[in-house]
Length: 329
Image (cartoon, rainbow, N blue to C red; front, side):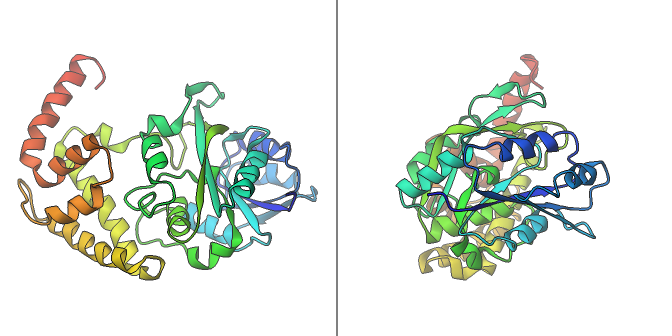
């Protein structure tokens, strides 16, 4: 297979790492690509850098007249897809030379509709922080267990957008991207739609250096680890799930009928949890249906935090005290 692939890059104030990333894409072993870049009103030297690539016949650059935000900027790019296959790219990573080639081989050999993969987490100078993003974020076991089931992307996002290679034919179901929740971002939604309607594959090898720096839109930072009160953690958990299930209920057509019913029940369950401050004894069957395929520890932690916050608060303070003794807080 040597068909042309559209590579979609959204940029915004990315002057520091942009040239290195563009060059890593142009220097791929798989050369038949069309790199489509949309700049979202950058105020630094990003546009100056992009203008130096405008004469490259493999690159098209769009300059937005007003700021769209990164989700809508990716939506704009998805609407520009012309070829059968497309990939997503961040502006600050570094692609290993075989990334596209290996992704295409995986998709072709296994007759897949979407391929995603692991990443090597690096600092701003490309020095390794974590060899595996999936293992650091505790996603690897779920990916292996739930690959090609409707649970892969259902409860939380297992796919990082910059690893995705997918087929254009699913864009009619993906677009427009939902925007009612900041927790349902473009790659989460894309992965969900295709995992429910197509065949998904996973590359365990890392072909991207996933750069972490002070301006990442999405990275390895675990927000809940910064909280000093259990109430903050619980409120975040509930807010995330409310946003996700509201999106699901508003977009019923991508789900099979049994999940449509569960989506509404889950939304009602998390709304109800907002009114329960110490204990909750209702809707446990809904919690079980949502979390039953997760690891035992993940199941118990979430159950106690959501349904028994009084008990969880005690455990949270003990954990925080131990972390302070160890100098980790």
